[in-house]
Image (tube, rainbow, N blue to C red; front, side, top):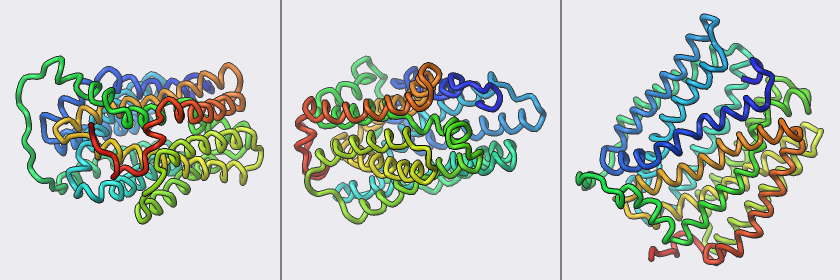
Length: 370
């Protein structure tokens, strides 16, 4: 998109296009995840995303790719992701015993976060070879993921087939609002990453600030994954048993500081290191939040709660990218990154007082649903 339009605003609109389906389909996604086989729904969503990649591949090979076509493909990916993420989040607690959910959340986060960040990094390298190679890889890998879903085995669950009501459709929102620990954890991640969003501007930093080109973009994209993978694997073996809430707020503050360092840096080595620290801090917050939501949510409501959680996650990621793109268009990329880093620190400071119960939480296993 940036190569076609040379516009930071259009780059940011990619995030908004992915975010729209999360908002519009939140009630439908939650209902489907709780009323139907989550494996089947997830598989269908992955196939839709594979088709979107195939569409971009065909358009590139025929020379007909346009910004409008990219937005259409991204919209399809956003729809598929809305169903996929909610179903996978709801499915994870059905695969492991309750006493090891925190460790499972850490391992799930390790694979998920690493894939989410390394994927664009690999995409940068593949794009240097040719856009068609990158789009083809997307189509193939989503199709492979859909096939692998067939082999997931879960304990059969009782599914409520009663017609949906307004109360049942909004049950996910109601549950989160009456669970202050869950509300605090999700809200903290929402506002911190919404204001952060430095990774959305990596194409601009790689080309115009650090002057590194596509290979530099690939390395920068991989930096948060290095921190995320190392931290996730550590947390998988060494669960957080004390001061979990304080650690979560501290991680958000460190996330903000790392964002500021990255924004001010003109050294590739320092920028890479700042993004590694950013990935470490982000994954700590993700692991604690994932474990809290999984432990506190009843299985029959996990789809609806996961759908709402997906909106928060989507807001913090996709809408955060939109925020970063708009800010970069108005005040420049450096100013946009600095603004986001300062905002993340303020969120941690204010959130620790607003969500005092979360700040006092020792570990996810010690929390019990009200």
